[in-house]
Image 1: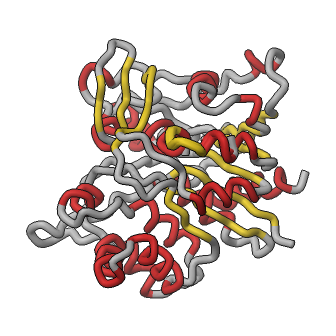
Image 2 (image 1 turned 135 degrees about the horizontal axis):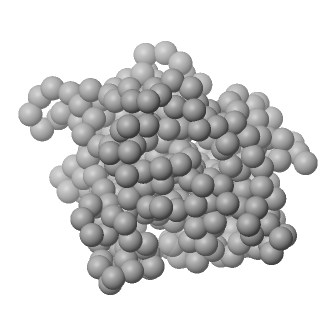
Length: 347
């Protein structure tokens, strides 16, 4: 019987995890994706088409697609010319068209997955239309995933003290079932709040696991699950979400939404070798490596084990033509990360 792995998140971090895991034929993979994105082409999908954002779903499909030909490349293609269409991806527009034809976005996601021969399940955390709301330490509130992600102005160097969806939403039944049946649940890497926590604040997620963690029921689902829970630590800090954070800080914030007693493993990258140009770019953004200070709390916490390794992907990530959003330049190596996760699955 195949082992079941659930990856909860969204964006490049989740793509990286899935890309590595796809190569293991003895795994049954499910990706649970946040649906609160509202920047770039997702804003167009929400505002002009009245649809849920699909960029996270699209990235997961591309990662898990067995089709390595032109169709897979098309789903990653981003238009860079033309008024109104520049910055949009073919994949997002395709799924919007299928949704219109079927009159059902859930069905459109499933039909598109079949077309791409996706090896696994892509499950939105919820099909409700919601926005993310972050409250910072000085009381400032920022509404919307994109604005939180930018981390501009006075909130850039502040901590988020409260995080939720507006309105409240509940975890979808398919996502909840996947969590309940999982042998392993992977959280991260990715933007701490707009990718990971965006799922945990969904009602029912924590209950099902016990976290996509602000959706009602997500954390509850994770808590109830018998799965091993792995938190993959980010490599870099980010203004607006994790400015100046060490590894301890990530876990402290995670613990606000998911009981840390439910975390079995924390995976930490130890490789900090990057090109000078990339280092300078991060310095301009006032981002830095996440300091590994977990040994300082190791004696007081016996619920999780720290797994360290040189997990950094080599080479520079080139920005796509037409892409108007900031992207991570430091990423985990899909194969190295997947190897660790699979080893932990069979411990």
